[in-house]
Every structure is written in structure tokens, then in C-alpha cells.
Image 1 (cartoon, rainbow, N blue to C red):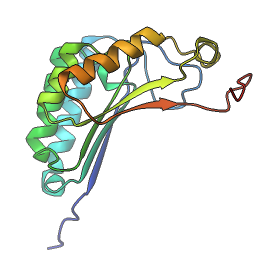
Image 2: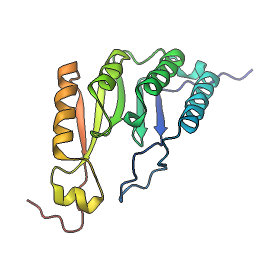
Image 3: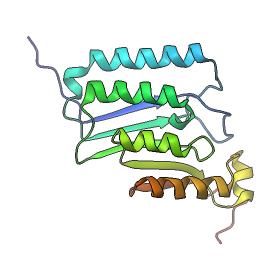
Image 4: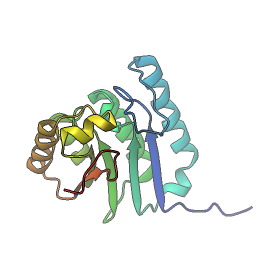
Length: 173
């Protein structure tokens, strides 16, 4: 019998978006139908169950997408429960969740924090309206600021924001 190779990292892509940004090339769908999202969550649970032996000593978990914060509160709980059930979480390492500042709420952030997520990655892409418009990014600067303030209040210490440079029409300053 052949030994099962252990995984050290896990990436899960959540493909659901409110809208698809003009620059995005990732698989994403604008779909807010409960049955589609529920089917996705069941499939993730099944796939994690099939890989349980390989997921026991993870050093990092990264949940990206679409963004995962687009999930409803109940969907987010189900999703994180599946991950924790089959991985034992990540101790003393990174458990990152991408968040869109327009779809994250203090309640969702609290669920993430309580589930062991210890790093947030906010998709800002730019802090200027002109560049965000060029990218088709609909999140406002105040939504980003509010999300960052909420995350800090809840206790997150490891937070990054994604920025894109070299956008046509963008100037160095």
C-alpha cells in the first residue's frame, strides 16, 4: 500500500461575486442563487472529507476567490465548519481569508476570527477613485476604511490590502 502524501498548504477558491471586476481573470460567477451556493459548499465538504489524511498538518490555509466574504453569514459558518472539521485548522501558521470591503461585515469578521482565521487580505486594488474606476472596481475608499477599522476592533492584527500598480493612465504620484 502506497503512503498518502501530506499537504502543507490548502487553497480554496470561492467563485461567487457581486459583480466581476474588469481586470479579473479568475473563475468567478455572479450567482446569488442559494441552491448553487449550497451545492458548492457540499462539494467542498465532500472534497475535504476525501483528503482528510493529507490535511492534518497544514502550515497554511488560504481562502480566496471571488471573494469568500460574499457568502452569507450562514454559508460562511457552514464553509468554515467544513474546513475546521477536516483540517484541524492551522496552529501557529497562517489561515488567510480574502475579503471584499463591500461584502464583509463586523458579524462576518467575528465569525472568521472565532474560526481561527488570523490573516485578512482586503481587495482594495487602489486608494484613488480614478484608478478604481479604470479597473471597474466598485468598492469605495470609505468601505475599505470601515472594513479595516472593524477588523482591528475584532482583534485581527495581520491584515493586508491588495494593490494594483501600472494601471493605464496611472501616474507615479
